[in-house]
Length: 75
Image (cartoon, helix red, strand yellow):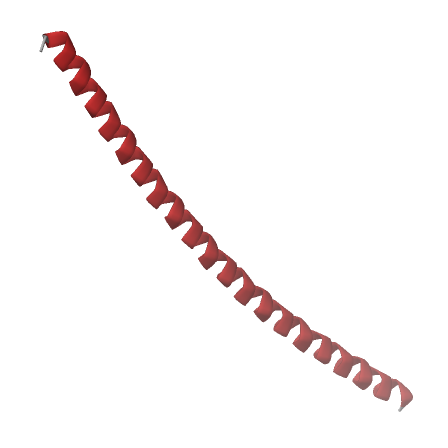
């Protein structure tokens, strides 16, 4: 086998290993990014639920204050 043939074979093997390694790395990075997206979505849902609860409490307090103000006006 000539030197040029060995060089071509070696470089093609190196290129193949490099491409396969990159694809595996990229796949695992994409999986991790998707998982982090799920975690962010769960956190966002939790915060939204808390915000809705706080809003309901504020609405109740507003109604109570309006009732108190009305009762004070009438007396």
